[in-house]
Amino acid sequence: MEQLSQLVSELRSAQCVTVLTGSGISAESGIPTFRDVQTGLWARFRPEDLATPHAFHQNPSLVWDWYSWRRDMVLQASPNAGHIALVELEDWLVKRSDSFYLITQNVDGLHQRAGSRQVVELHGSLLRSKCSSEGTVFDDWPKGHGSPPACPQCGAFLRPDVVWFGETLPEQALQTAWKAAQNCDWFFSVGTSSLVEPAASLSSIALQNGATLVEINPAETHLSSRAHFSWRSPAGQALPVLLLALFGDQGKLVP
Ligand code: BV8
Image (cartoon, rainbow, N blue to C red; front, top):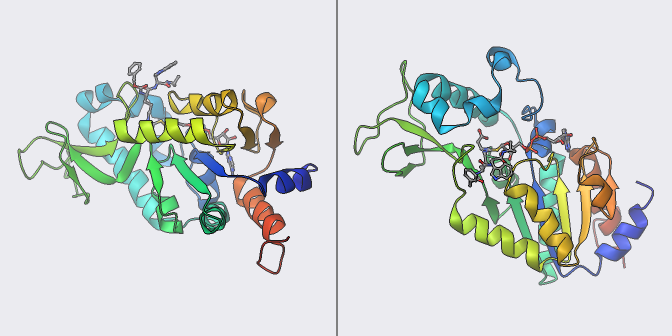
């Protein structure tokens, strides 16, 4: 990006950086995004038709199997250079005792596996299951046999611990995300089509509060024209380039 040197010199005076990621940051780990055509068995379904309470009520086995398929894929995947660059950005800011918030719409846990320490999961995690009746969360994912496994406490079906369309987001996560958008002076929107609410509104909140908006996405989105820096690139390429420009190739901050 031709304005990289301008972005880097301004970013050096950042005091609070908030990053919002979407499924695009996991694309280079081999995880299909939502707007990719779903591969394999799931090519005939739309995520919006499966990630809903109605779909689970109608066909709990189909929905459980879809998440089991996605979970297996995620467990075989590895964090990519984009995830790792965000860990380095966090380290750099925390060392300067500046603030860093990583807010993700993703449910794949790859940020945590890359080493990110404080990840705000707006939409939960498919690495956890929860009771569909009482909401008790379990860190494991029992095998279903033709139907979702039963909750060990009450016998109701287990479901993935994710937020479906039509469900409200975890209150704590949402509050943290809103504050992170209100208080930051830099907001990065990475790998998201910025279409799903309320996550999509975070960039507007940041802009309204005077933040510099950076979008990293190989495709244009409705946000691109409002971004101060619109970096048309895959995250796994752009983020390491950004960190290298910040630190220089001696691995330390270029004065
Ligand atoms: C709620 C978990 C209160 C499950 C997900 C206001 C207006 C309109 C609609 C609504 C509204 N408020 C609420 C709604 C309804 C709905 C909604 O937003 N619908 C949309 C479709 C319009 N929202 C909700 O229901 C939310 N709940 O608001 O509660 C309420 C309740 C009822 C009624 C009203 C209000 C809950 C939303 C959460 C749903 N759960 N995930 C699961 O994963 O199975 S959403 C899921 O889809 C993801 O988590 C993510 O958020 C979203 C997909 O978006 P992206 O991540 O951006 O992925 P996408 O494929 O779209 O784009 C990928 C991008 O990456 C692309 O731009 C691509 O170019 C780019 N890319 C590709 N490769 C790379 C790359 N970028 C960088 N590097 C690369 N290599």
